[in-house]
Image (cartoon, rainbow, N blue to C red; front, top):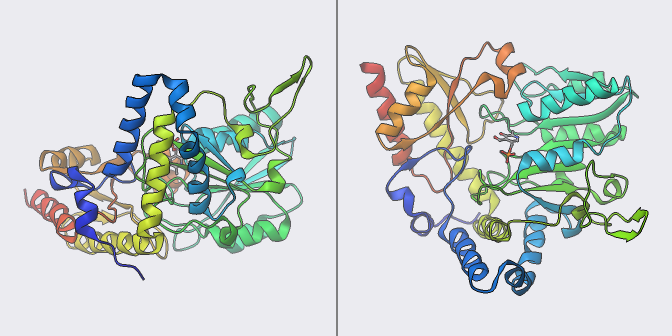
Length: 394
Ligand SMILES: Cc1ncc(COP(=O)(O)O)c(C=O)c1O
């Protein structure tokens, strides 16, 4: 196992010396090479114009597909670069045909954006949404999933790492079940990419969406979609333009063969280049060491929080990841976030409406979300624990 050169990484992350930044599930701090790649491209655009700049950088722009493909163990033609994870997910989901009575299986901690799309498609088509219950640990119950499968199930769509805590759903086991039954499997990997190994072959998902700005440390306004090749050719995107589908004759368009059929012509090339550098940066460190360090820091935070009076840790699952969620008696989550910010510690909050089913089942209020990354130190984790200990004593 490679070791992480924490000093070098922190010197690539200048704000880490000024802030205790534990909001990587919101938007991580970008490393300097990511920022430099974007600035350089914006400079080039301002010097020679946006079209010429994209032409000049076309090799590097193409390489972004290869980088994302390497990250996922996929092929570059299975990757579409998008402006965020939501649009990536929507492009896949709305391309799937549903009819009255078809069933969509999802999990309790499904992300709001996905669930409202299920509701819209259910309203339009008469498809039915069935939520697979969680097991005692809080993970999607695999046995319940197997029992719920019948010939009407047309999609399994789950969030791997939900927005509201450390839960890591059993994505690969779900993939084996989906495959055994020939059911398309759409995985929201938004909070997993950059935090852990994401291998679409090992997981067995057919479609996967993710964002750039979270654990991947890329720029805002970036995301990507993976679609497995055999399915790709069957999926007509819900919306197209002349990039996705060149206008080949007056009354005909021809969809591209590759995943770029889900893209449109105009793009933020500086952000794309930043995304590519962020992916390469993560790959150079190694996703296994990243995951190991993220878990070590999150576990340290959970054990520190366990000793703070009035704190309840809200994370679910057998092996929670790098999102630590909690509440504290006598304090609203937003007040905790504000008081931490005043002490130079950046954390976030998650509202019940982001994961309504899970929040309802567990009667969750707004919860605090602290999400360390590999560039954080043990001392920073301890600072948050000390801050909360001080708050509890007030
Ligand atoms: C689980 C999950 N899926 C999807 C998204 C949406 O990502 P984006 O904001 O890039 O569209 C988020 C964002 O918080 C998320 O937590």
